[in-house]
Amino acid sequence: MRILILGGTTEASALARCLSGRSEFSPFLSMAGRTSDPRPLPIPTRIGGFGGVEGLARFLVQERIEALIDATHPFAAVMSRNAAEACAQVHIPLLALRRPPWTAQEGDRWIEVESMEEAVGELGHESRRVFLTVGRLELPPFVAAPQHTYLVRTIEPIGEALPVPKVIAVQDRAPFDEAAERALIARERVEVVVTKNSGGAATYPKIAAARALGLPVIVVARPEKPRGVEEVASADAALDWLERRHGFTP
Image 1 (cartoon, rainbow, N blue to C red):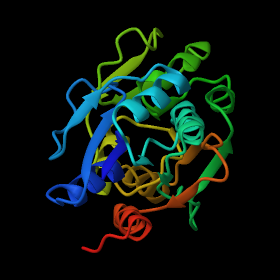
Image 2 (cartoon, one colour):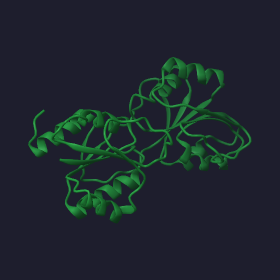
Image 3 (tube, one colour):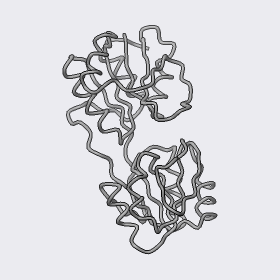
């Protein structure tokens, strides 16, 4: 069975490892290419887009794909919409592998917003030291608030994505450790954290660190994903779905 995994997440990588070596499956992974040095995986991998809904539908037919697993990032709304529409066009089963969002715990000081622009507004007019962990592509809205000092952590160099006077750029890749996050936040005298509600364990330590230090966290809500798509929350559940739907047993 030929399976296309739309990936770039921890869950996609875990599913790839689950499927590797299973002779009844022929999986391959597609990544958007936003990270220049992705971690290698034990299944064939392609990099790049498809050319919208029509391009993806054509690819599914040409490659004789029998099931598609949407394991893209929770904020990859366009790709998820394209996947849903393309699968509907060519009648290929679709499963969404979506990690649960974080929820506020006792002691959290969350400010929940719907967009990056709203997050910028919540920073206020007075200069603050801001820990930005929203990804390189989400930085441009913060140009509207150049009075702040930004500690920006990304996987890739930020380049000219945030041309403001005071930027401290850190390149690092999850998973992170709570003690190290607390040390970083304390060392850089961070006053507020800005994050997307990505969910998952790999980047949650910044949330726990902010809670321990009593800092506010501006949390950007996830965009709406296509409705009516069957969802699971783990690679093991996605593997079960493939086995049950298509009559295979481990």
